[in-house]
Length: 581
Image (cartoon, rainbow, N blue to C red):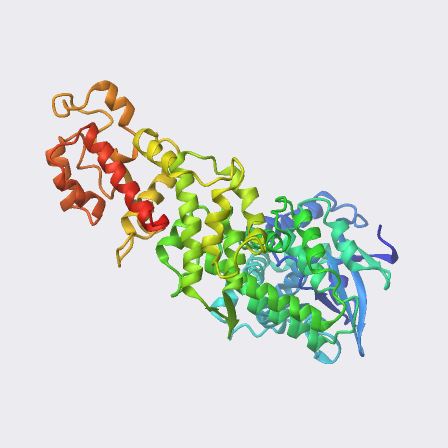
């Protein structure tokens, strides 16, 4: 429940120009997201439509929503922390910037100059010390400062790509297309466009208000709620300088690791789920509120600046571990093993993160792996488990719930302390309960000879064939780019010409068509068609850099025995590499 000191109704000009108090957008707020061709255009169009509809009623007012703020004093400075309404406040300021520049560059009258100077004065706090709108996103503050100062000539190309500049530019063009009469009419309308400002009680916890406000409408991401919790600064004194240092540490060392992600908000959410699982041994529900409350439970209260700094440093370390396991290649990590496991990242991420954490440390924002051999052996064991389950046809869903719990068992006294995590893991899953168990060698032999691998999951099959192909090679196939281009090829075609494949009966074709021994990888199966084996093996061997295809040259004919032999050979290579059988 909101406990307000009072509420006030202000038009959007007075909202910005009514006094010289600074609006402060805290770090936990979402970025400024209004789009020029969507919300900004709609606001401008709605204002004009309102003016047309109520042109004969000058007392009518147009409300565009609420702004919730809390006055906060830091030393001698009072600022208004914006709890809700960032988008409206920011867009109102951009409208005033555009009006100022039109007065300066288009209208150029004495009255226009006075109006421009008045706007300029009110875009800054008292004594022109700081801009009227302060962001805790330092990356965008410079772009906004340039706009508020009116010094646009030195704006960088990156700053011009921000929503602040794009929306300012749109508003400026929108208003510049008006003649002077319509422009002045628009300014009159702005004095009738109102917001309701809700001032919170100084003792009210903006953290809880922020949570309750955003329980309606589009829910906030768990990462936004977590930032809110981290940077509320309620339990201890924190100066502006200290706050900025901590925020910069968070954005530079932690959030920056996710900037290249296409959907950064979702990427952060996924990270926090895995981070929580490394601490609690289970994967929490995909729900922003659940992620948020579980995170609070993991880190507990934050009683001091020192504790907050420890949390940020720890998050940055785990984010580095997460990215190395997920996407960032590391010189000490076997590309074949990690590439294979990234295809099942969601199933094994928590286990890999926990193991890597125990085998590494961070130095100058770089992850140093203390024992690369031991870590790669652990990855190798997980690959052995995952690939064996695929070959045996075991379902993968159970592993998602099982994997986060495993590390705690691996660290238990039941294992010899001299055993590496790889050996511990294989020993553990060999005796695990049904559903989580490592398949036996007999199960694998039976499955690869007669099991239908082709229709299980094509990406899993591609990964397994790539894994076998890469074994012992210096230049490996890439699990990202190469696998996208690669196709599964049936050596015995799905629709063979009977006279060309007469050594295989119809019943045997149905039985062995989709088994491992009849499948390979190719980057160009258009030229293969339904050619006989004598031609097909030469095309596959000569026009491909895949060793699996070159090995076809040793077979004079391709029949049921050849299919069984080839499947057995691939399984033998796999078991020798991963189980030393």
